Length: 206
Image 1 (cartoon, one colour):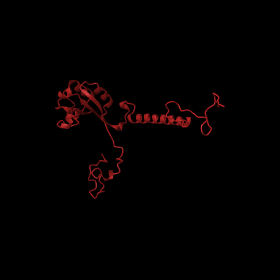
Image 2: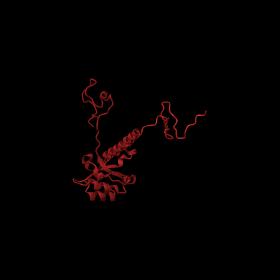
Image 3: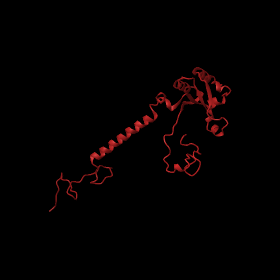
Image 4: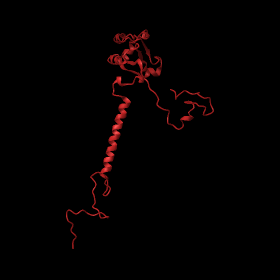
């Protein structure tokens, strides 16, 4: 006698429970389907991590407007500007200390902003600095109370300037986590190797 099964009857598992089929492409075998609560928990965790990453990114970089930077994160009254290669070829260094560069458009801007002095950031004769274009960077010092953000906006529109930015201050947050850092007496010498205390390059204080 043939054993006929009704159409709506589920095949039984070895323990007598109906088998469940995994969604196509899930990679899970029968009997290994994840509970709904576990999937929801993972999705919630991913959403929280995404939210935290956005918060940390916003806290690190601010809203993107220069005015949102804390006052201690840059040198007040100072800007860094980099001349274009063409402007650098026309530069006159004779009156930099007076706030003039021999470039008509820029000198007019310096005068309007009341620039007190301009100084090269890197030595012009340094071959490495020259090869990297660093000799085209100058520090512009505004008069006391000068608005660095207005000056930044003005310099950024000059055709002779490659870029203009605040003179930012970078601070090391902590010493390296290298477990052998304490043996690096050249970086921080506490006499740990029998040498002279503080005979180092003051890396921790930098």
